[in-house]
Structure formats: C-alpha cells, structure tokens
Image 1 (tube, rainbow, N blue to C red):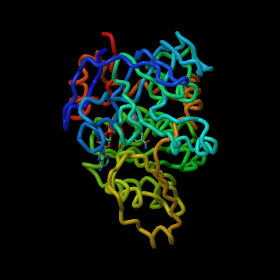
Image 2 (image 1 turned 180 degrees about the vertical axis):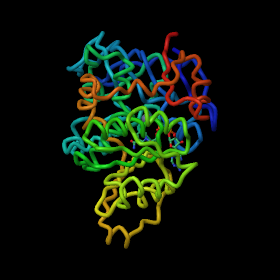
Image 3 (image 1 turned 90 degrees about the vertical axis):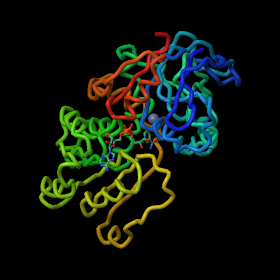
Image 4 (image 1 turned 90 degrees about the horizontal axis):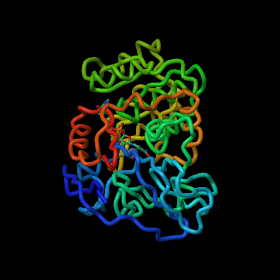
Length: 348
Ligand code: NAD
Ligand code: ZN
C-alpha cells in the first residue's frame, strides 16, 4: 500500500509499504478515508522527535472504514465508519480506569516512533488500530468524515485544554497561537461559554481566520499582545490563557496575559526540559498552570456531539485537500504556513 514515510529532517516520501495485519485479538484494520497533517507531525519533520526511524509511517489523525476486526473486538465490525484517537490506550490498566487515558501503561501515538509505542501511522491506505474497542468511535450518521476527523486530535485536544482550565461561563479567554489547535480552542471556548476570546498569533492571516470564528484579533508581530490584552480587559488580564504553540517563550507570555487568580492551560508540544517558572509571582498572583498531553478518550464523545449538533464546525480550518500521493507538497505547504490545515485523501 502507499504510505507517507519519514526520511530525515525536512523529508517525507510516498512509499510502498506492507499492508498491516491483525496482530492481537483486539486489533482492527481500518481503510483510511481521510488523514491530516498535524502541527505535531511538524516536530517530526523538523527532526525533534527522537525514535523516528527513517522509513516509519507518519500521521495520527484519521477517519476510515473498518476492514477487518480481531476476534476480541466487540464494538465494531467490517463496514463501520470510524474516527481514530491519535493516541492509544488499553482501557483496562489502573491509569485508564482512573480516566487518565493519556497516562495509559500502553500509551502510544500513531506514527510517532519507538518512543511512543512504535505504531505505524495513519498517512497510509490502511492502519492497524490496537484495542479497537477503546481507540475508535463510530462517526454519527449525520457527520461527514471531514467533520469528524479532528475529533480524534486537534479539536478534542483544544476542547480538553479549555476544560482543564475550568472555564466559567462569561469569562475572557486568550488563545496564544492560531494554528489548527488554537483555532479549535477558540471554537471550543465559545462552545463552553466564554464571553470573549482574544486570539494571538504572529501571522495576520491566521488571526483573521480566528476573527471569522468569532475571536478578537491580536497580531503579535504588529502590536504588543500584553498591552492589547490589558487594554481589552480593563487592565485585569485574561481569566484563562490557552497556550497552543509550544515552548518556553509562549508559556512565559501566558503568565504575562493571565489575570490574578486566573488559569493557564498549555498544550503546545515542547522538548524543552525545563522552564524558569515564575514561582513567587504565581504565588502572590494565585496563578494555576496546567500542562499535559491531550486525553482524547475523556472528551471525544463530547466533541463529536458538539460537531453533530452544529455548535462547532471544525471543517472551516481546512485550506487544502490533496491526494495522499501529494503529501510531500502537503508537508511543504503546512510547514511554510501557506496552508492552515492539510487533509490527505488516500486512494486518489
Ligand atoms: P501549528 O504549528 O500549525 O500552529 C502554531 C501556530 O503558532 C502558528 O500559527 C504560528 O504562527 C503560531 N506562533 C508561533 N510562535 C508564536 C508566538 N511567539 N506567538 C504567537 N503565535 C505564535 O500547530 P498546531 O497544529 O496548531 O499545533 C499547535 C501545538 O499543539 C503544536 O506544538 C502541536 O504539537 C501541539 N499539539 C499538542 C497536543 C497535545 O496532546 N498536547 C495535541 C495536538 C497538538
Ligand atoms: Zn496531532
């Protein structure tokens, strides 16, 4: 089958690789109908994820049709239309039982190399899904594959970040980064009751898209975001700050934007081991700081329902739809920020 493989820093390729087979009784084989390129795939593309061996199949966002199930799979059968979770969980270890699916003892991320479970990715014609009963959801009949696609990753990541910040109705949220995750955070914050969302990015076109989604635009390369947020909040700062870029610089910015007693929720992926945490200021200003990988299984049913109910429209961020065979160009477009979100279509 055709698949997108990692080939080294800044290089992906379309290659013929063996089709996946059922390996364990809980596995399903899914024929991929849609997959996407995520900001997290760019960390691989930039060579920042250790354990990505050249030749590994990339990608972790996908929808598809169940092709085959192992004997232990109960909830799915051949022909079911499904969306996959970008990370896997076993569903039965002590962590899963606590609802901490992102801490599962068998945690893995599709297409993220040996450090993340060594699972071949979804930018391919077929994918093997372990613990299929846990890591797949049926797509509601009224939703197209493209509307459901981001529920397996960026939408639910963003929704969970807002939920982790314990947003109260009527609060003001600042979102740092208007890439796909930030744009989904804007929609999620509004769906969860935010009165206002202040959208910050360096790129004007991304902030303009955020504005079309209902946010107040702040172009950080043209104006000082701290001054703007202060001005818009009467000098208080934002009740909640969502950090959706990754790394010390934007986390530091979050501390400057949040009001006393406010909450920061960071989801940007970083490989920086440490960060100069503003300890005394956070103590006196009563700041809550939360960071973590998405817990997709906790929130995916909520996001599917919100999309099905028309409260969130994830499709609006798709700028490019390309055949899987054009994935090399897709990565280039997304990495250069010419594309907001690239969806790849296998078999075209
Ligand atoms: P992206 O790279 O497409 O978007 C990042 C955006 O941040 C871009 O629009 C960029 O212009 C903007 N930006 C960069 N520096 C900035 C700055 N200093 N100030 C303001 N804006 C700045 O990525 P994405 O797909 O939107 O993902 C965002 C982050 O979320 C990535 O790090 C990704 O790996 C991460 N992510 C985390 C999880 C998780 O489980 N925690 C899940 C999915 C994605
Ligand atoms: Zn992702």
